[in-house]
Amino acid sequence: MSHSKIAKSALISVFHKDGLAPIVKKLNEQGVTIYSTGGTETFIKNLGIDVVPVEDVTSYPSILGGRVKTLHPKVFGGILNRQDHEGDVKEMEQYEIPQLDIVIVDLYPFEKTVASGASEQDIIEKIDIGGISLIRAAAKNFKDVLCVSSMNDYEEFLELISANNGAISLEDRKRFAGKAFQESSHYDTAIFNYFNQNEVELVYKQSITQGKQLRYGENPHQKGYFFGDFDALFDKLHGKELSYNNLLDVDAAVNLMGEFKNDAPTFAILKHNNACGLAQRDSILEAYKDALAGDPVSAFGGVLIANTTIDVATAEEIHQLFCEVVIAPSYEEEALEILKGKKNRIILTQKEVEQPATTVRTCLNGVLVQDKDLKTDTKEVLKEVTDAKPSAQQIEDLLFASKICKHTKSNTIVLVKGKQLCASGTGQTSRVDALRQSIEKAQAFKFDLNGAVMASDAFFPFPDCVEIADKAGIKSVIQPGGSIKDQLSIDYCNKNDISMVMTGTRHFKH
Image 1 (cartoon, rainbow, N blue to C red):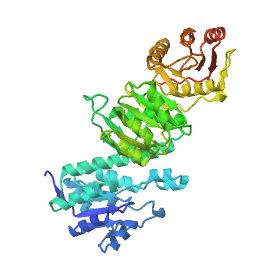
Image 2 (cartoon, helix red, strand yellow):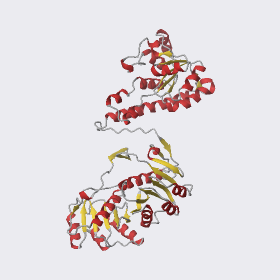
Image 3 (cartoon, rainbow, N blue to C red):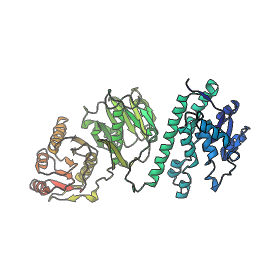
Image 4 (tube, helix red, strand yellow):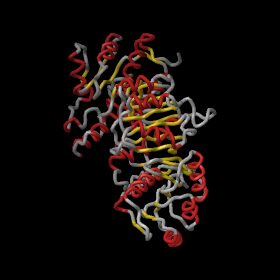
């Protein structure tokens, strides 16, 4: 163990005292002089352990309602002095500054206070000044000082001082310094983002402390990590660990099903972030069966999601399919037991939690940040541009198709009939290719496209798409409009008794 040190003194001043008592007792047992202040000082005294008030060191009381307690040369000198520096050693003696070998200090709960909806005054008071300064000082001087900056590290710290008669290695002091700077940088990021809610400063700062290494990334030769609080969104009831690709599919599934949150029973099957089956019916069983019929081949190894409780009958049907993930707001008890029949099948309960309103992705040597596409096409925005008008049933199908289209990779075309996804063309470089792919696929799975509707994620610059759709039996179209050649498509529809509506909103998804 290199450059090990045995502490003779410690400064303890914390907001979170859970788990602190065993540490204080152990330090006392090892003959460590304990300095403290405020509520922590009282806490230590109540344990029957001697403690030196910081005021006795500084000869200065806690002032300004506790805003200034530890900000003093005798405290910071005790932390920042270099014990192998002749000049520092002399000055410590000259100014009667006590050596501080351990600093246990945490930060006021700023994020929790913001999240609680507290007043600005309460939030501002939770911006820690003394605490963050003590943490930075102790972490900077890790060669001589050990810094414990979070209650999450109390247990590990107790193990450290309990081993080797209190001797702590330089490697451990440096490691704890890293933890401390993570605490301080995360804290300052939260404060900055609070002040920058209106994006006055065009700066992107994110700090996510929950990190998880994945088995690998998109492919086995790539490393992969997930940074986020997955457990805040889901209860994982069963199955193997989620992979990088699972997480992307779960994200796509949740965003898609968000469009059908309070609707009739709806079931979707996704593969590679796109819906390969989706249907809305009177029961979740029928919705599942008709979603599966959309593409029973692609459904193999897919991610399944329901907008309502999965019952026993549906679980029995799902159990016959090899699928990676099943997501629902809830499950009947017996249904859950059936689904658990495959040991690797991941079963998730989705919680009622608000999703982030922005999306972020790496791009070149930086990141692209944008608002999520939270706009859903509704009946009110539809502009009927053809002589033929869509029927009430067609309008329902058009809006249904539009919701799927919005969550499918561009260029895309989506074909729907009777609130069932017949097929889609996904991620094509040409809209004509997307349409041809969707027609061919629908026909391969024996769908009758006569009377089906078509949705496009962007406008038609030429009438070729409506002509191909017409020849396949499609009689109603929804698209954003906005091409200088919109009239060409409108004219074709008028000549061939096709109804078309425009939404005015493009829904690219790349």
